[in-house]
Length: 316
Image 1 (cartoon, rainbow, N blue to C red):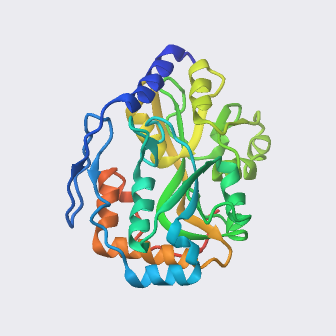
Image 2: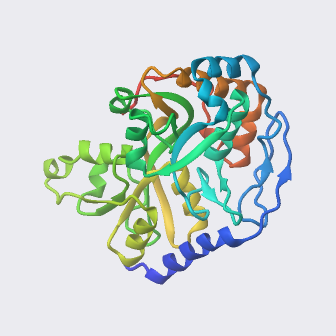
C-alpha cells in the first residue's frame, strides 16, 4: 500500500475543523420528508423534532412505572467530537450533539414527554452500565445480537450494517468473503458486532492455507484513521452508514462493501418497561411521518425500519 499519509490526515483534520463552523438552524417538515441539504455548518440543520407532540398516555405510563422520570431519564452514549461520527452523531460548533441518532432520541423524548440526561461512556461500557443501573437507556448504534439480547432488551429504530473501507489504492475493491482479508491488518472497535464477526471467522484463513488476518481494536476511531494513514491498518471494519459517509467526505479512501446487516436499537435493562414505551414512541414517529423526516434529513431513508420491535430475532 502506497497511500500518502498526509492526505488522510489532512482530510480528517479538516472534518474535525468543520465543528468550528457556524450553524444556522432551518425549519422544514412535511409528510414526504425534507430533502437532505448541507448548511454552511457542514451538516443538515433542518428542525425535524420540535413539531413532535407528546403522547399523554405514554407519558402517564412512563411516570407510573418510574415517577423519577419526571426529572429526566439517564441515557448513556459515547462522545463524538466534531462531525466525523455522522450521520449517527457528532458535535457542532456550539457544543451541541447533532446527527440522526440524536434527532431520533430527541423525538422519542418528545413523544414520551421527558428529557434525556445524557451521560458519556465508551462503547464497551454502556451496555454494562445499563445492566447495573447507571443508565436507564443506552444508545450507540447497538446492533441486535443473540448475546446482547440475553442481558439487555432492545427497542429497534434503524438498520445498519457491517462494512469495509480501505485506502483508495488498496488492491481490494469488493469483499464478498472474510477470507479476502487474510494477511491484512483490520482496524475495528472492541465489544462490537465487527469483533463478533472477525472472531467467528478467525479460522477461515488457516482453512484456506493463507496467513491469518490481524485485528487491532480501538475505542477511538481517530486511531483507526491514523492507522490507515500510516499504513499500519489495511482495512477499516465499521458501521455501513458511517463508512459510506466517510467515503464521500474523506479523500483517498473507498467504500468496499457491506458484509452483513443488523437491526439497531435503544437498549434497556431486562424486563424494563422502558423498552416497550420507547418502541411505541418510535412507532408513533413512524406513523406521523416524523421518523421519515429525520431519516430524509440525514440521507439514510433506506436504513429505516417499518416497525419498531422489542427484541426481534437476531441476525448475529
